[in-house]
Image 1 (cartoon, chains in turn cyan, red):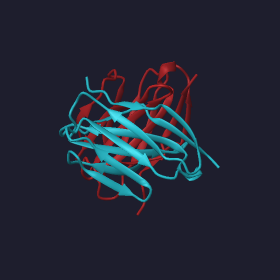
Image 2 (cartoon, chains in turn brown, cyan):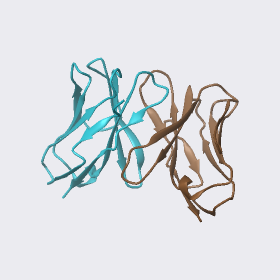
Image 3 (spheres, each protein chain N blue to C red):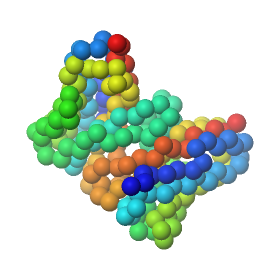
Image 4 (cartoon, chains in turn cyan, yellow):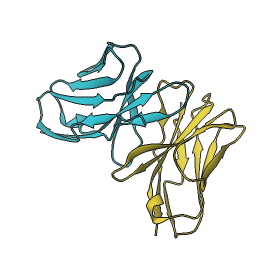
Length: 111
Length: 111
């Protein structure tokens, strides 16, 4: 059974601080996706990483896919209150149409 | 471009009843995916439909079923509702498996 372990589960920081969220598995994924979900809404895709070692930047967010395509990280620089939300990583494997989701990281950024 | 639309937004049913949830994908997307997001369990893959056919299903009992119509919209049916079926049901669509667009979900409450 493929699992994605996401850590930390909860993170409460002050505005301006940096943070990193980790997503780890013993399984290899063909791609890894990061989503952000607001209460009462569906997850919104932030980025997809496909190649081992790949790094993608989205403004203050930096996403990295591990060399072996088993893990990923999300780093936020100078967090802002607008970054508050639930961050989810999800791995795809083959042509199954199935994403394996991590349990999520609830981030609270205090002004 | 209209996003993925789901209806109804909220549904309250009694244990043992049947629930029908609907999803309209983004125009041009032929694949529709259904996920269950129950409290404390994260997002669990339910079903994948593509070109009118069921392509894959997750580890859910047969009372969870669905179909995809010629216009690529989809319906999820849950029979013999149980209390633990209470959850947010999310539909997503894609034209490739690299990134999903999710709808806002249907909140199903079984009492």
